[in-house]
Each structure stands twice: as C-alpha cells, then as structure tokens.
Length: 215
Image (cartoon, rainbow, N blue to C red; front, side, top):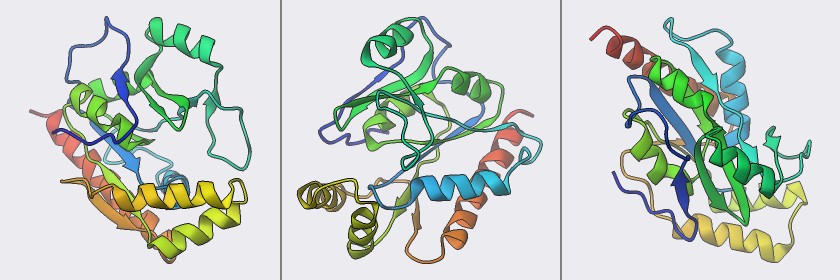
C-alpha cells in the first residue's frame, strides 16, 4: 500500500538482508504529529505489557537518531552522521529514513523479531511507512491524533521551539491526510485510556502473529 511521505524520504536498510517481505510477525509503527503523545502512549503500553502477549515476543524498538540525547526528548540511541552512515552500510539497521534534517533508523533486531513471529512496536514516521510496507508482510499502522488546540498547548509547554517552529509543525499536522487502513487513537484526554487502546492493538497483533505461526 503506497503512503505519502510528504517532503521527507525513506530508504530500506542496506542489502543483503532477509528475504522480503518479512513475516509472519507483525510490525506496528506508531505515527502522528508532534505533541500528539506518541511516546507517552508507547511508554504506558510498555509498562502494561511487561511480559509477551499471547506467548508472542513483543519488542518496543528504540530508534537511532543523529541527534544528541536529551532527557526531555524521547529515549533513543544517538549517532553522528558519519557513524550512522557506516552502520547503515554494515546492515545494522532494519529501516532508515530522513526527517526534520535528521537521520533515523530502527535496529536490525526488528527484522529478527518479526521473522520469528513476534510483534514490534516502534515510534515511526510517515516518512518511513513506504519502506516499512515494503519490508514487512504484516503492518498495522497506529495513528495518534489530538485536536489542533491541544497540539498547540503541548508544543508550547515543551518550550523547545519558537512560535514560528510550532506554527510550522501545526501546519504539517493539518496538511497531511489520514492514512488509509490505519488505527486512529485520539489522545486528547486521559492518556491511560488512549494507551489501553494501543495495548488492545498490540494484543490483537500478537494473537494474529500466534495464529500465523501455526499455519
């Protein structure tokens, strides 16, 4: 299924690699505009799913980003551009993409988990969805949303960007159309309730992966 990656681009990891598309497990990219609360929901879901669902291994993948580590941002691994390019060339990543002037990647471990019938949950990006759809046989896209006014409040509260930068992020959020076939979770109220919806998606994916392994 084709996805619109807007102004950003995504490329699959360096070959040689596993035979594509990779299955029978399920890959769950969690996408949405800045301020929607993707990290919050992922972290809450991880806490609720400390053990594998339905006997299926579940991985909450850490992204690699060419950005310095910052406790106020998402928990991620960091590399400079030179090390990132070298790692990509050596096959250390499953999928890589570019966004906001930075390079992003998911580790090659993601491929193994999906290939062995597990479930992977990752903070993704619309820029990466085309590459993800090509690489994995079973993909369930989760789109986290929130009303524009709530996004604006959250972005302003972070205090990391200028008013112009916040306005640009809000414009991007309204210009991008809904993704066909995605599971939409609105995170406008109690994040615990929204996180439970994500947990339900993960549990259904685990059940699907378990059944796939029996076929």
